[in-house]
Length: 218
Image (cartoon, rainbow, N blue to C red; front, side, top):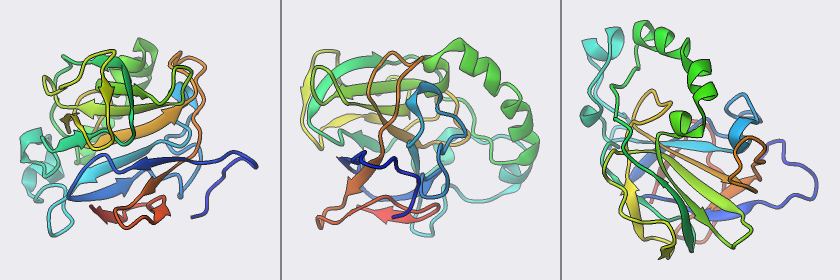
């Protein structure tokens, strides 16, 4: 695992927040800050896209090449999202629509041009439906974002155990196709939150950070 981790800063170890086959995208093994900015504590965030047995997020067709696609046609849409750690639910946001997916260049460009506008609107416009867990009262905190509308099963103040179902994968917020965004932060004051490095513990006990486009099977 090779990426720009600050000297002396330890990784926060998480379990994978799902079961099945998922492809890592926007991995910090590729660059840091991975999403192009430290904004909202996203420095070491990572995305996971649900894929089928052929490694596809959805079958390729004319809509994928030319226009938008229904989120329901994607392998990851509706899959259970699990708590990656023991913790307490401190933030829940639901009610954002699952918009159409945009894998095509013609549909992605206009959407990209509105990204700055969503960033100015705040964390909810970027994260969409999301859940934040606190490992302790003063953090660190773990955010799981882009969840399916109406699927959040937990409430603020609820204690959860690693592996509990929190919600389902959706396409809400700043999202081109259904996926789950995972990040850790030292604060939930998003304007100045900082993101520590994270890594994942596989079922066999190995610890790693998946490389870009690596498929993880849990």
